[in-house]
Amino acid sequence: NAGVTQTPKFQVLKTGQSMTLQCAQDMNHEYMSWYRQDPGMGLRLIHYSVGAGITDQGEVPNGYNVSRSTTEDFPLRLLSAAPSQTSVYFCASSQGHRYGYTFGSGTRLTVV
Amino acid sequence: GENVEQHPSTLSVQEGDSAVIKCTYSDSASNYFPWYKQELGKRPQLIIDIRSNVGEKKDQRIAVTLNKTAKHFSLHITETQPEDSAVYFCAASSGGSQGNLIFGKGTKLSVKP
Image 1 (cartoon, chains in turn blue, orange):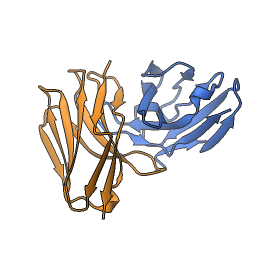
Image 2: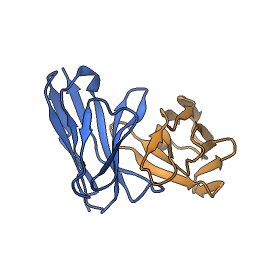
Image 3: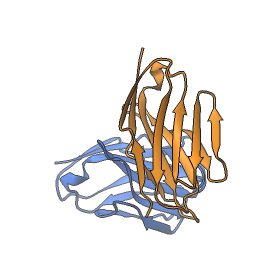
Image 4: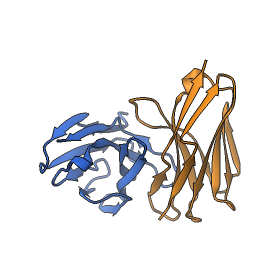
């Protein structure tokens, strides 16, 4: 099993550009989430999904969109990148809400 | 929504000493409390977790305790080693069927040889 795979690992965007961060898992997990990690702020939940076709907002959803058309994939879209979105983004998946999350290796995004 | 507070933000101990990290949560419906360890430049990794029907859980040198009445839970590391140096995060999961795992801000643990 590859676990949780995130691409790309690094990305530099210009303000106003759009892009999609990819996340895929091969563990047949129902739950998937996106977090951003900033120094001193811990891991903040952006969006999460409890199954294909079901998504919900987390703590910091503004500026991000998600969709979940399959169990395996949970892409995160930045529609118009801003410098405040410079961060490390982690995707994670879990069997259910009372089980631990497995994290991907992260995407380091810089918006200039 | 859920709010998780974690203390201290930094902790320095001598090798062989014990380390304790404490967290409080706000949502009384929360029923799952994992702890993650993150080494520099790496992804967070689950080290131990506890569910709301259990008061304490132990795994070798690490243990977690949960007080649901007071809404706090703690991580205890005994006989610390330099390789325990990392950032530790606590988290709490909302009740029901939500996949909403909220993290504390983290504790940077340094173990001095």
